[in-house]
Amino acid sequence: MSIRTAIVGYGNLGRGVENSIRHQPDMELVGIFSRRTELDTDTPVYPVADIDSYADQIDVLYLCLGSATDIPAQAAAFARTFTTVDTYDNHAKIPAHYMEMDEAAASGDNIAVVATGWDPGLFSLNRTIASSLFPTYQQNTFWGKGVSQGHSDALRRIDGVRRAVQYTIPREDAISAAREGNGHDVTGHTAHLRQCWIVADESEHDRIRDEIITMPDYFVGYEVEVHFITDDEFARDHQGLPHGGHVITSGELGESRATVEFSLTLDSNPDFTAAVQVAYGRAAHRLRESGLSGAFSVLEIPPYLLAPEPLEELLARDV
Image 1 (cartoon, rainbow, N blue to C red):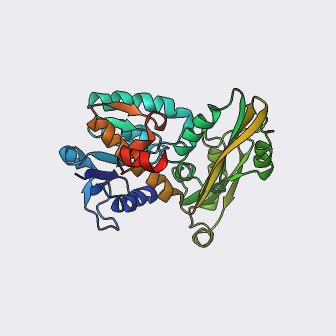
Image 2: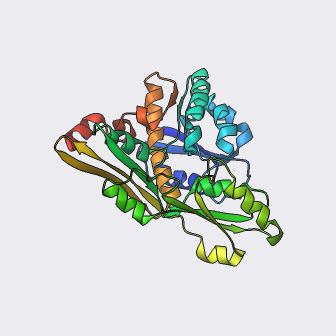
Image 3: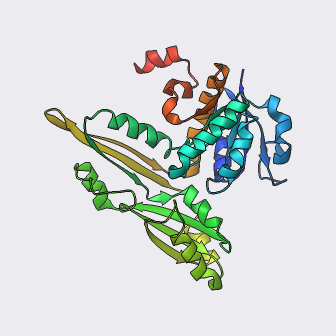
């Protein structure tokens, strides 16, 4: 029997989730719920205000909402009625988000899988696995070069910003130091440049720049460049959504050293984030079917629950 899924929100991530679901052998897409009445899609579209009336038709609800304001304001309400999967990416606030979603999901006897994607998400898994191998270790995470969806969304929420994108750019000397086991002084803040490209009225530039560089959790503590450009320049130069990154862990193993590196190169950040989110939807449904409820992070979910194949088949293939 197919897993009945639905989507809330229809930006880049929502479109990626829609496309991914269409290629899953065990899922069907019931509909997309949005505040907008007309979307460029063949999937049925319903008012998000009416979503509770579809509770008995949806097994997994994908929350394709922005982390800056939408997830904090809306996710818990959805989790009280549906099993949900989100891609909340504000690292500093994930523990609080987890606790809120745990209470909400448990109250409705649902599952809430939080902070999926690739970081947080797959990179979280790699950091935990790699660091567990060494008695003492040095670990560094690098993001980019690429478009950060969460940071770009945070920029677009600033009053007066018409269009915006944020590129995260790692320093090559910092990556080299980490690979050589000399990354002790490298931090996420010092190893990256956050480059912002903004379309806004000239009279608003100074205020918008100040709001960006003083925005906690997203830009404070980083080297930040803010560039204001025209609509035509934005359309010409900033339409792609590439991303990627590295988790590099090194340490001593008795008489030897080892380095573990996990890396991603993505043509489309939202498409890949969506693929991870969809896979964790499968796991969420299986957890719910097993009688569990509450919030789960990617660290708590066995990898075999992500795959459409049964465990016996995975064991024969991979072990």
